[in-house]
Length: 212
Image (tube, rainbow, N blue to C red; front, side):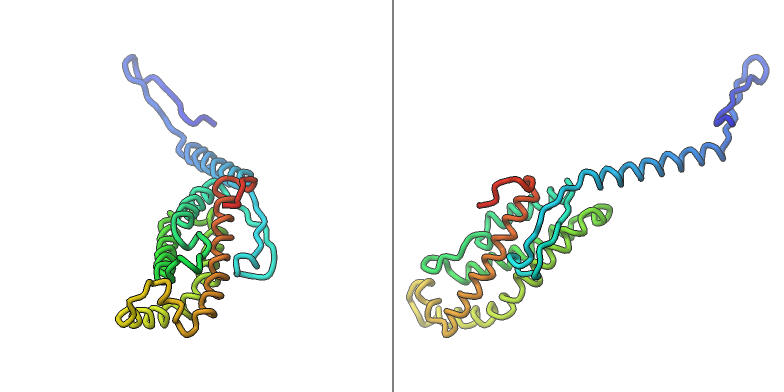
């Protein structure tokens, strides 16, 4: 069965005849093979890393996380955000200002959500695991501390600033629940640092040095 036939109509005319059924079948076959090859490539090109959910504060087990080249691009952006904000650095009780730390956490929360929202729809099937992981870190690892402490601390701190001329570091230590707040803050901070390390491992390859 020919896809195309060429005939001469007289001495000066060439007639092309297409077998449209064969053309359509061939196109469908080519598209189907291309789709299968793409799926196989995505599967073969995926790498994996073991995640300790306890360190991230999102569970109680170790799970295998598979990621693709596209996931690495997203992980790199998240890693940069974590590495350039207080949320990705250990809390210094003597020098860090809690209000500034909360500002950093809140900003990262918004930025991470925007990064996830900016993922094109056609990439979601290949980045679903990373999206789910990041949502868990934000909602289970980070949000509980902010929900419990941020609003009431900010309210107290703003009022205290009006009547206390001390340094922000000295003023914050007068917060009635300072020790409990800082203990929870440091615990949450450590989870975010572990998440930063994980994003680096994914972005640069699971064998990279993730101590920083």
